[in-house]
Amino acid sequence: MRSSNPVFSRRGFSRDNGYAGFNAQQPQAGGPAVGTDPYATGNPYAGDATNPYATNPYAPQDTQLGAPQQARGNVMTIDDVVSRTAMTLGTVVLTAVLSWLLLPVDPANLGKSYGIAIGAALVALVLSLVQSFKRKPSPALILSYAAFEGVFLGVISAAVSTYIADGVVIQAVLGTMAVFAGVLIAYKLGWIRVNRRFYGFVMAAAMGFMLLMVTNLLFAVFAGGDGLGFRSGGLGILFGVIGIILGACFLALDFKQVEDGVTYGAPREEAWLAAFGLTMTLVWIYLEMLRLLSILQGDD
Image (cartoon, rainbow, N blue to C red; front, side, top):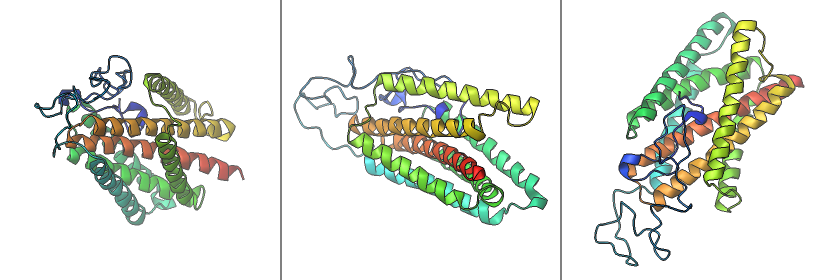
């Protein structure tokens, strides 16, 4: 299954377009598989040591070994990724702000507010599932997902800020931005090396994390309280930190995806897939940061 949780997102660009990124095996949501590391032995794009782009499927047909490649107008660039990500994140932020203002959370309508949040989250889940099974990215689906995700975040953030920890939303936003900037700097400086081993470790850790969270939820539903206590108190703080670290690891995978897509000439439309992955990862980090800060402030 796939949700706004980046654990369930498909990493890598579409196989049909000739670029597989990490996932040469076309993993679907709920069953990610480790694919091909472009830097590992057997890299289909390796070509010759003097020209790693010699076998790039997007290179012009008349490109020869050692000859400069001609400019292509239909390949993905960093600017494409930045603009699509800005549109997607902008949609999330806009709908979140509108939800906060137009759907106020008050004691008389608390159940209704939570119902709207849950409904929006379910719609976002369905849209993300549809996108995960599509062979090509759909801007309409991705922006619709972002809109409903924003409604969910707006209502939940308003409820947390009003009834649990006033001012925690701004802190969570700043914390998310700090994690993004920190991972980006570490990635660019080479402190984080994203390879097949890193990918496998992150996916295994993420699946274990989600299994524990689902188990905790089931115990909470049937036994009441906070289940096994993974979402509150000392254990809640520990798992909040682990969740943020996992989100940071997925950011590194996203950056690798974007870097490889630009390097190997992925189609321009794949910038939407990169924006989709980055948005889901940032939403994950924000929610974990919001929950962690709420627990910390609640213990004061």
